[in-house]
Length: 422
Image (tube, rainbow, N blue to C red; front, side):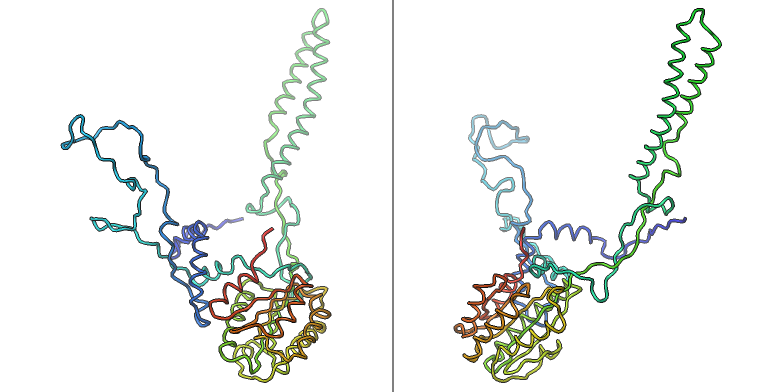
């Protein structure tokens, strides 16, 4: 079978390997720069690239030089300044690479911080690198299962790229051992016969010559056994099969009541846009359900969730009851990893907050993997926060955080979805 080798020149991205090596080497410094840069971003430019600055001290290379003090003997060629017995002034401590190279010298030379541009993909990959949905454990074949190619064994025929060298050599060694063992047994028998003939007097010359000839022939056949033969070769075989995928659903619940003014809604939207971007980039098999609520709750699409201007009073339990209904009808808890992210200013009817706690405790929290509540509070916590504190005491997978300004969004998001270390 013919083999094709692509020798076309790579016209662009020739330094892609070096670029990725640099990102891996200074990943911690780049992540710190990304975290600082993303604080200044708006919703519109959240998916763009970024020019970041890496401090000079973080990319400096170590240098080997003589330390201060001690006695050393060395020659200064071309000396026109000192005579025997003169005392030479001790050099400054920064000679040999120990000083601050960023400071300009008399010659006008120095070293600035390193500026590095990250593409959109690199920026988002680094930002979402240490985030994950917690405790995703329930698995089931999805409705449209993805296909994966798996190894299914070995075959005696195949293409050179599929040759399994280890298995082929194993077969060759086994074959050689089997042939050699057969010849060795015959040689041992002939050696025993030869020994008996040598003990006879007079020596039977013809019989000895015949035995020696047989031994030599067996030795020749033993050496003629090939190191590897065509029937020793084994090739990897592969087959396609449905891949077991992890199913997950994320419920995004946003309060759009009258107490949520434009500033609060803007903060909630920023949080949910960041969450939506994180989910769609990191998880292929995930359903996202958007729910808006005021006095009543409604399941909406992405466009209406982020841009609708509908408002009204506040009944938070309507959103929780709608979510519970959707779970029971469409997402069996035995098969689905269920996640919830809720954003509200916490302002709720006093009679409704206890009902929210009851719905959460009895109908929702026993079946969800993780529940994140974000309260947007420019002043102080509202009644819903106090009710949710009692839920958090019972369920460890219930997290609560507060946001009061744009600068709080990214740290809170990282804290809620940070990957657990094992």
